[in-house]
Length: 80
Image (cartoon, rainbow, N blue to C red; front, side):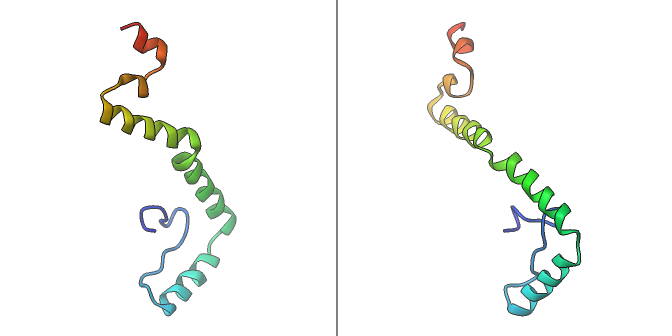
């Protein structure tokens, strides 16, 4: 979770135990929930929107295959 959730978009527990989870939940509800929700949505769209996922996936395909067509528009590849 730490790679996805930080203090800008949520509240992490300090340990994997009930008291720490309860403290994190209490701390979360002492904050501006609407602002956290908006920040979390913005981060999710930035990192996980389909266009971003496909760009990252095509970059991996391009790196593995050595084919520029995976990461460049077809017109750019054809003009080479």
